[in-house]
Amino acid sequence: MPVQEKQRFSILVCIDGSEDSLRALKYAARIGAGNDADLTLLYVRPVDQGLQTGGLQSSLVRENLLNWGLELPGVRALNQAHDALVELNYMSDDWDKEYRHVDVRGTELGDNLTIYRAEDGHTITLKLMVSPSVLRGILDECEMGEYDLTIIGRSDDDQEGGVGTIGPKIAETVAIEHHGTVLVAHDLEENLGHLVCVRNSDVSIRAARRDARIAARCACPIHLFAVASSDNQLKNANEAIRRAKQAIEEEGLKISSEQVVLGDPVQSIIEEGRKYSVIVVSTAEVTGWRRFFTSSVTYKVMHGAFNSVMVVR
View 1 (cartoon, rainbow, N blue to C red):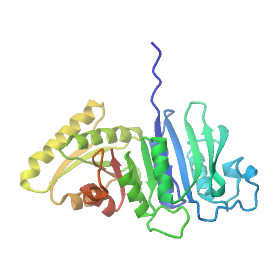
View 2 (cartoon, one colour):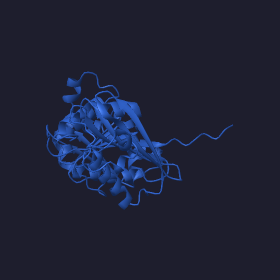
View 3 (cartoon, rainbow, N blue to C red):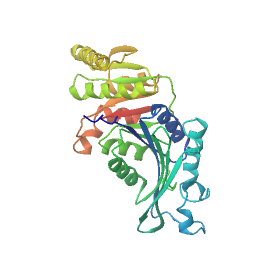
View 4 (cartoon, rainbow, N blue to C red):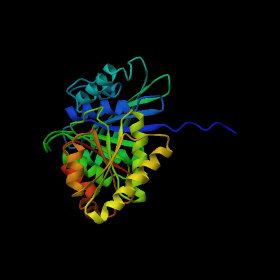
């Protein structure tokens, strides 16, 4: 029988040049350590935001994403991200390169990619995409790429006039509408571990197990957390912790701590989550109408949290 090829782990990192997106990139590099992971760095440029080539011929522009010049759309942010990965020793400029271009109606630049390939097999792709909007572009890439994890560095404020800016509204909408796992990174501090919030449901337990695999990739401690809204719910909360712990240990992984508290689920998670790198929450595989999701604990935590939140599906 032929040897089955090892499944690769793919990460999409949405870049806008902000400090949060650079922190998100560094965290992605940590999760992607090893030769089984591929990174795609995406900058989305709205098609109606003056997509000129700055006087360069289109054929020249398409030859090399990093050599266009800093004033061209999105190149500054992608250059910055590329340099950060080099400084982290995550990649080197002597890797093999491939350039690709896809024509997009309404702009002479189109979509452009620079793909770096290391000898050990993993790739880093820098992609400048044009789209009707930043949100639409990110969602389209999420669906086309079928990534294992999407990481969005959420800027502090929505800047409607800022080309390519990823504000809270965009980040939260991606987490709501995308059917995969999304980490909304904000003030992301490494080495503080994952606070994995669990309920006594199959969906929640599967999500805890999935996050444990992701956390293991970056040697991030796992802390289980359950909230009972009343005394009558304490038994359920403790059962959720027991099931999650068992599921994670069956993966050969360990948890660092477990805790059950009594209180309001949203506020309890937000306050406890301040101590950790990432708050991990789950939602159903199919969320249905958006109004059901936006009334859920998951959405309220993501909307109100002071730090990074991962929605695991």
